[in-house]
Amino acid sequence: MKSLTASMPVPACVPGLTRHASTRMQQRGITLDDVDAVLAYGRAIHARGLTFFVIGHKEVRKFAAQGVDLGAAAGLQVLVSQEGQVVTTYRSHDLHAIKSSPRALRRERKTTHH
Image (cartoon, rainbow, N blue to C red):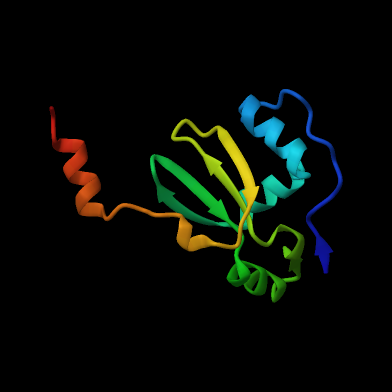
């Protein structure tokens, strides 16, 4: 089984990463390969104006059956802005902490003008 994570350091300025994301990746030992794996294989959850890409236990099991080892990326969350930039990334297995707003509320907020 091939592993997708490597110890490639994160350069200070990478297209598609905010400076904040680059700094947090360095502080947290998260590599570009880790982020790429989450963006390629992770589940997308839309919440708080961002897209959370996450690798949970379900993704690890699903892709292990296909010969892809995501074990090192388990619990990794990558937050992407509407513009497509990686805003930040961190490790957390608590996917319930990501609160997506119900569709009706999102539609109501978009159409309500103050």
